[in-house]
Image 1 (tube, rainbow, N blue to C red):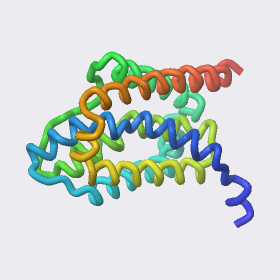
Image 2: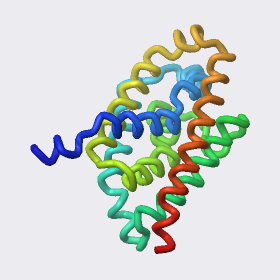
Image 3: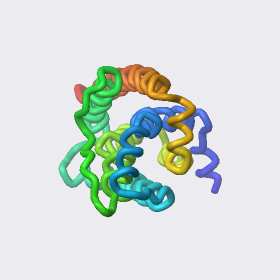
Image 4: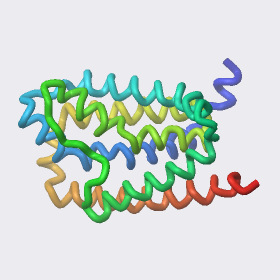
Length: 197
């Protein structure tokens, strides 16, 4: 109990949460979500959110063990993750598509919505990368907060799109793309030193 309070840090939760928010980019994904809803007929917000939460928490718990099987330390993965975040930031800033598969099926709430749009390669890489800087309990809270936001956005997608408009969504994507680019640079410079010690 005392260890929990010793590791609990609001600042870490906020920082980790902002990184995940930028990577998941649920607001920027509204056009994709609308397309899925149009083609699949219905999106189950709770189902999609709970599956994404399970994937992200599972990867937080088991990700490091999986890495150790391949003889990779967390700093090396963080550096690799910084390249993924760098590529994702360019995707957001330049409007190119590198990571998302928009194939629509009957299980649209799970594939492609929960995975890989919400809990995709970028967010899983980010979670392992964050382990190099933050305590696990703070990352768990950051994941819960983000998945709660994901659920709210999924429930209110059409309304949010009407409020923001295409221009508003485009601006948000660019802003979070620049933030993500800065985070990628910081993640690289913080962890790359450990590879040469």
